[in-house]
Length: 82
Image 1: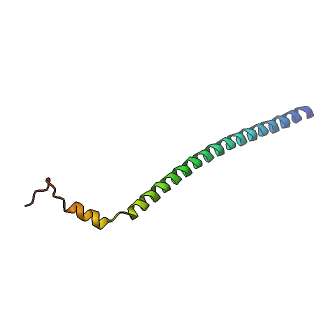
Image 2: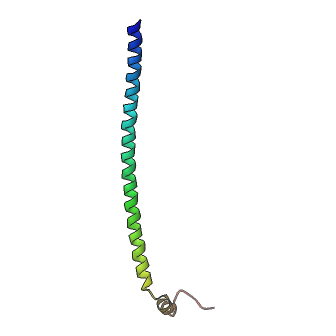
């Protein structure tokens, strides 16, 4: 009777220990996947920031009044005056 109770308790603790090991291994795997995804997103954000800065710097050197005025003075054949 005492041995049967000991076996039941022992099996219960083994089951709990197995479930905990499974949980911790899955948790570790999920964290690794998450870290990888965050790293990919951060690299993408960094690349986009570089592109934005490049475009901003090029726009700073663009004289809108000068170039837009020249383009607006070009006759456009597809527009028919009324």
